[in-house]
Length: 314
Image (tube, rainbow, N blue to C red; front, side):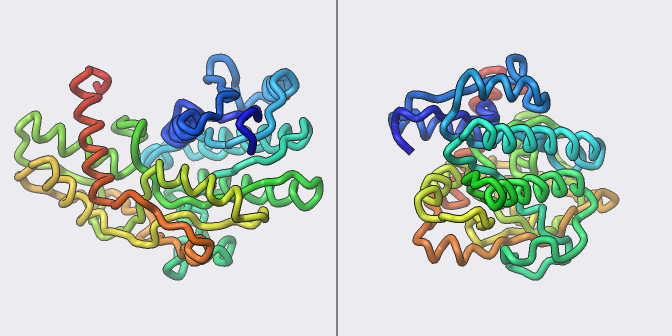
């Protein structure tokens, strides 16, 4: 990828898209293409076709997606399936149609079967039933990965298919319904300290385990793999270590100075109990993440408190 290339970051306002934008700007890529939802509806075929025809991107980073936590996925499975299918279909198809040099697609570890052996190897995909609480999103991501693979096989579109673990970090959102577990817990415990609460009630039993990677590490891994992974076959991107939600909650509580009781509402779902990625292929290529989990959590707490202080969090 040359410094002068036109690079379209679909979803540049999101956590991953903004991370890609920061990295590219920092490394002197100045020909960056972006469009917010008001100016470009990525679900609309004609609009996306016209955008590609006018702007002629050389590279496309497909970081746009409808995302959310367990409750959001349970409430709106149709939207999680439809919106993500529409976004992916349009960006992959028109990347091919308009001669994009390479498209980078981001999947999710939730595409692995619910009862998947641990750690999860790339070959386990499509080998069992999905976790019901995020089935719509998972099916969409499976379809996007396969569509990129098929367009590579049939039409020669270069597509890099990355399967990241749970992400967190700068510019994540803290919406009570749509946020992911790490940012949701950060908000709960910081707010509890600020409001003097003596008890925080969390969803599930706390036994579910999750693997977390800071978004800045995923961004660096992306550009590493653009040079090293010359195939449309998927590759897992993660840290290879997981943590129970209970231990995560206790870690965040400790870091923010919360000393009250932590309760668990076991009437709420845990989601998939385990989903730790096998990152052997990534490690064998020579990549290792840089941001330790503890320092990443500390950074997230600082960022949330700063946003709250500035009045950006309701």
